[in-house]
Length: 374
Image (cartoon, rainbow, N blue to C red; front, side):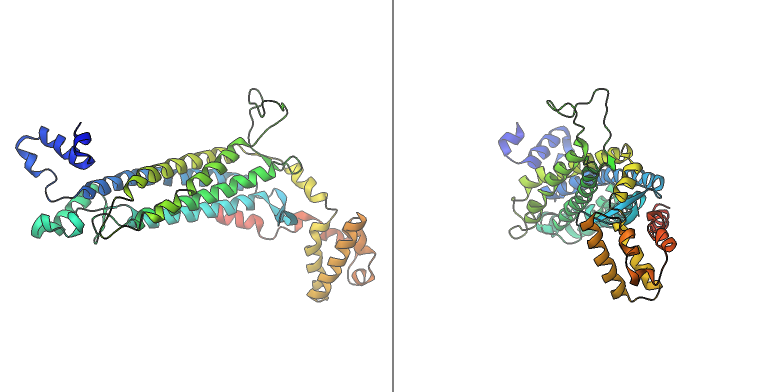
């Protein structure tokens, strides 16, 4: 009723509270402006939300770390430009994700002091209505609430703070979409190195194609991550207000902040579930390496040839030519190399055989997993 009459949410609240407070009514909202209440209240909500998001991130990190350890020695092909590159381990792929989540946790921790702040500075931030003790009053209120202080404001808390939070959320969402996109690609039938869990007893993949097992959770994460990032543009626009404030940010923020935080919580939880239950197929990983008939070991052989005295450029050209010929003739790369005198003059068939073992060309893959996870 009061809101309908006053058309002002805080003034309506002040009137309703006053009616219940007897003689203390004259002190309610004395010296304050609406955004002393709104922005400080928002900071308290953000404080709780940030705690939830931080725990979500840590839970995802725990799950990714567990799976990375589990598969630190699981050999697969690395891919660049969607083409086969050189061998790596699935654990290394997941360790890269762990490291990325670590950085997000670090960013959030660092941002807290800038995001979780309130104000009690009155109209346009001067504190004039609070008198000579305005600074002390603001400090007492914020200390009591466990919030930082926006020491210099117009009439509202600086919206660069909200922009940092929403930008952080967008950054995390992009990581989660990246992780989920990789699952979707690895689940392609022609690849099938990893796949989203599927409840075969009851779950339906398609209303007509009964054989389908679709990566619906990973796709859901990708779609919601895109939606979340759609709120970034209005958040930046909300920083740009007339003079000490106007209302163009208010209606937008009632939608953007809540939606972004809820969406991020949701996709973090879904991402944890996705990787906790992820199915991994090492036998298909090895099959996909072997389908190249040794081509993915070209770099390993090139390095071996340089150890035998060839220049890097000479070795690279030899391997390039041999690889193109092997691909065109659909022959194993090792077989083509054994036909080349300039190769066999500096190495032997036994040494070449060693160079074509992908498990012997993993570099620091396992060591990196241990370093990141531990």
